[in-house]
Amino acid sequence: MDIIRRTALREGRWRNGLGVSWDIASEPPGEDTFGWRLAIARIDTDVPFSIYPGVDRVFTLLAGEGLRLEFDGRPALVVDRRFVPHSFACDVPTFCHLRHGPCHALNLFTRRGQWSASVGVVSGGCVLRHDGPILLFALEGAADVNGEVLGEGDSAVVAGEVRAGTDGFLYAAKLVSSARHLL
Image (cartoon, rainbow, N blue to C red; front, side, top):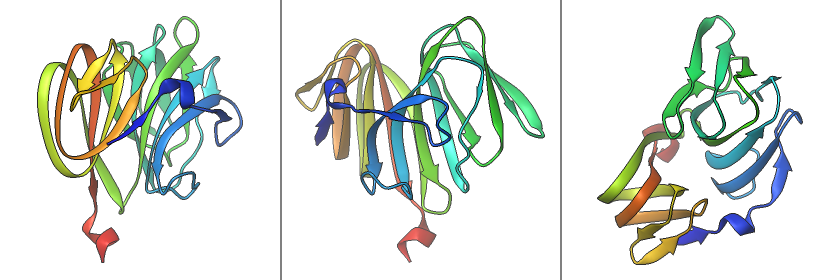
């Protein structure tokens, strides 16, 4: 299990330079041509999101009063509740309108044809089993993960069996490598 403490995250810029982000983990690590990537974004103003050709995103509001995402040629998405994952393609031009001030969001990016993800939010306890990467993020409160404590904002990358418990909320994503990627 690889634990990533929130205090170890380094501030960076969005791909389009219009916002601030903190990379948590990626495969391969630190590469712009990632297969998957988990990151936090701070959204301070109405702004276009970065374009990532061939990439899908799972967007989860962490803090703030919410926002409205407008997609070029597709219905808009209202994100007004924390800890609810929303999936959409990153290669569709997307404009973000804040509702009532700045927000923070957790983003899981997966490169289409290489990786896919199933994401859920756990409250209480759970047992997860998966051979591939399982990404965990303590959304609210601490979490016990296989006997290790994740503080709020801490993350872990695990494979195999995970026993987790929290009095708050824990983000859990199972990543699956696509068959085409394996050939």
